[in-house]
Image (cartoon, rainbow, N blue to C red; front, side, top):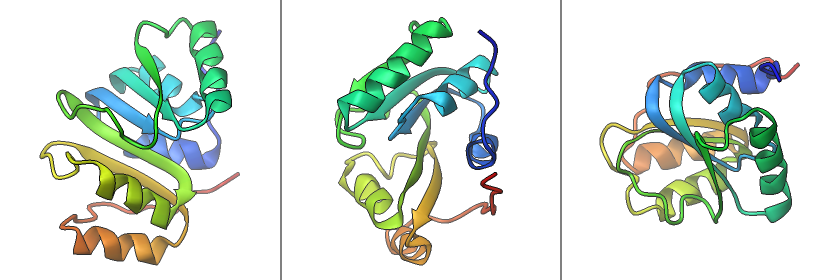
Length: 149
């Protein structure tokens, strides 16, 4: 099966992910974003994470259909629980509220690890997320408005 077109929001998000060896997609839902990143070669390998079993199963089916099971690991987990920073080049957290995104970052003991790009796409509480990132020692390097169509 060929590469599925991403919607405007996910396409914009994908464009912010730097080329890297491993990217983690937290809240992967259907798995389209991490599948796209691996299929296009932007990332070599992926970790698709979701807190709920049903969406993660959808992602597993999509990855199997596209022949990506050997390049994208799926994990049922709360945020970045159990994820090692070793070799991780990017963490993507998209489609959640800003407060939840910050909680996921704050709870991960490796959040300050140098060399990890954080690609965040909050749906709500954007100003609170910006403030929490600043207060937490992060800097925003690029910000884009995405067409959701």
